[in-house]
Image (cartoon, rainbow over all chains, first blue to last red):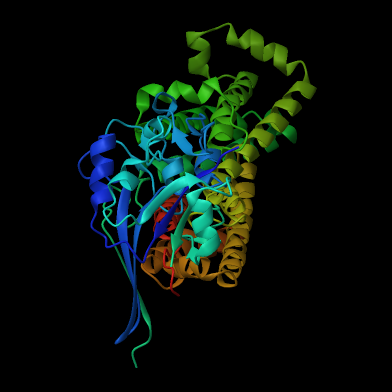
Length: 179
Length: 319
């Protein structure tokens, strides 16, 4: 079994939005919609301030409320890499999955179906990297198989400190942020 | 003194999602209200059939199912209006997804209609007999078997319970929205549905005993509803921060005015006082209290759906 995930180095990310533009270009994301985005978090009391810049997207969680709430099976777990995908022809546009995601990672496409990041599975299955990872100018993004202990992502997680987003929401996200 | 702050900014601006979730609009609360009220009416009608009240010529159990079918269909139409991919709606009925409350709901709705029709067939209305005279034959056959009528009553009560409960489970299964994420929500929606149904049937019931019984029952439902609110908030206020903040949205936050004034005050407490006086023969029954209860039930669904979507987890790493 493989489990695809991302490891993102927040110490390298400058929030340039190259990943956002690459995703929109690669996946024909409609104007005004985002499958990935940049979050800037500032914390502290002046002048003692901490900053973290993160590129965020669907976390392709291991526990998937968006899949279990789907009444038609449109929202499903893909055979390869355990990633979460949507079959557009099965989606009725009920929006339950949009509500069920604690990351608000999904949206309703103007054509009516629920849509979100696919980890560019069409590229990955051809041996390429997801578009956002491919274009990152600071090389802060890493994609790979978390179940393979020798993969780049697994090794990074063993050697560096990391966090995930909303661990308390209980969805076991598969995107990790190095700190 | 300046405390430590967390500032989050995002470049995402997806329609109906940012800055706060507002995906479900008026259609969903309208449906949840109508579904809940029909569920309550099925339980009331089922109980009347079960307890042999159908022997009374003017039992409300003969008019309830027809009105229920109309209201439920209106609710389902609202639900259909909400769908963004309307031409694919049939996909609901080519599968059953065990873990999806919405899939359960879709199939429960399919079962609700035959139960309501069976209830209608016990004594079809005059206009139905005019259109299809054969109905009186069927009604005659059903009425030969009191056991069958009792079972139609049980069926209506069970399906009413399932329908009423599912409208709450639909929301409470979403761990992503703290305000919905309480296992008391289905009880709240079921009791609120029963209360609105009792009020509604009280308004048109021709049988004096039934009308009086429903006013008394409604008082009971309203009191239970108040208790459920107390328990629900106790649960939230002793939960992690996102749930606590969610409860505060209703108790003291942005939704507090509409919650306290329209849901609790005008929707429960005032009509409860009016109806308590009425059942104790201090004042006469009027349409005021039942209408307040019904409108209060509708506003409750709007508040829960809207505030629930607004309630959220905090996507902050440092805190």
